[in-house]
Image (cartoon, rainbow, N blue to C red):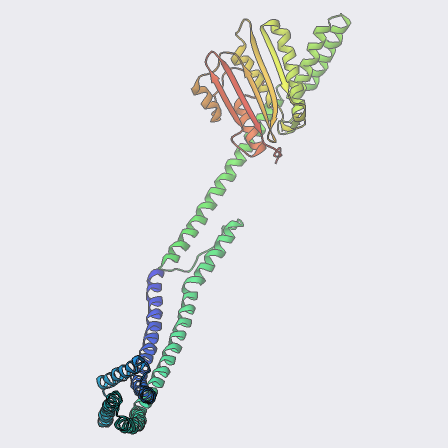
Length: 471
């Protein structure tokens, strides 16, 4: 059974039971309330009718003493008594008190007749007759009081056993409701235990497996079989763990192969020349040129020696931008001596950026490629510029030339770090190599932008992130 099916069975069952309990309690309360309303309604009508009879008698007495007073209040009181008498007649009564109720209504009517007769006698200036009618009305009001009390007592006597039965039934319903409530609570506890065992327990095991995989422990072993969604998820985690083990093993072999290839490439590069022999030879040539008075020749040899020494240092060693600029200046001096007025190197940099670190041999290979592939074939007016500036905490390096430019296809190949995207020869470290080392050094990819148009030159912009060098 799926988790959804389990929840769709358990939760609605609890809701139905809870609503059943509430319905029984509500119905029991409605029965009691309706019985009380009926009894109290008739009693209230009788009490109000008796009070209005007294009020009418008092107003009649006042009128007989002074017929000049306003009769509006007395007429209103009479109307109220007639209305209440009609409502009592409409409500009726129980069989045991129906005759008494009819007597009560008849006495009310007799009182109103005596009241009206007294008023008419007073109007005809016959006080003796008016007083006799008042005395009769007063007697009737006394009977109304007694009859009203008997009616109230009769109503209470009639409803007493009924109310008792209702209370007993209400007690039974309350006991039943309590039993249902207890059963509902027990079922809720059982549902919680069942959910804990069938849902939260397996989920907890899956969380444990995920944590083990996150720490690198991929040997999770077989898991209990289930036929619901959690079983599917457990099988997927086991399959993922097995696939990760295979991929990690494959990556280990691939990284080991790459490491061996790099070692072979480095050994091959270092074995091409004997740097100590070459440095000593260049120093001898420099001193010989000085002795012979060839100062420019000596300076060029020193520049070549410095250029070679800088190029043979470890490529993964970070250097400052100041060191990179000095290396470019040595390279520019050699090319300037070779091509004289055909080429001009321009440099503009913010002194505050000189201590920022980048990988060794980052800028000179780009400048050399700008020379070889951009302006080498120009007879005059060739310009290569290097600009360094700081913007918003980041350092921006711009290397541009006014050479032949490059096709869009070649530009995109370089940005995609495709092998063979560059042609020609330089120091052996092309733009592709520089871009890859920058990405590894700073841990970001969007560091280099290239803008080029055929016949208009090329501009390479490098972004150095703030405070990320060598992380």
